[in-house]
Amino acid sequence: TGKNSYRINWANDLIYGVQIIKKSISGDISDLPKDSDGNIKWTELSNITANFTVKQTKPDVKIIATNEKFNSKVDINENAKVDETYTYEITENKSSDGYMNLFENKTIVLNVTIDKDKNISTSFSIKGASGSSEQKYLSQYIKVELEDNIVNIYIVNPKESIGLKLLK
Image (tube, rainbow, N blue to C red):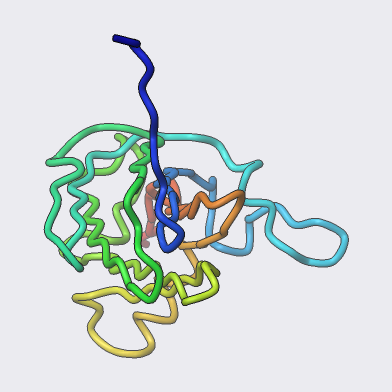
């Protein structure tokens, strides 16, 4: 008897990953580094940690992290199917000390869709935003990019600022 093992991937399967990456900026959104074309260079931002709860909610429910502290986490889906949408809920429970938690009491909902030709597309929304203006404001601090079948979602926190008032 041989000790060979084989892995079979069916033609309609695809492997992809979702990577959550926590970054920081020193000021507001205008402080994000940009290239000569004006595109934000997300990878050049500083890494920080935060506590996250992450779960896949569709098509199946899967807990990925429960109030876990990290600055980068990858979840690999080895059994993804074509013509399917996978939905993830990402909640930032606590940001690093000295940084604002812009997403407190909110959930980032990430959709990863695989079409019949195995193309991956993404979209996100923010559950708990008070309206379209808050949704638009918070969306500036999130970037979703696809690189080699890995969906990178960058979540950025600005440093806490102390406002001083001079009273006479």
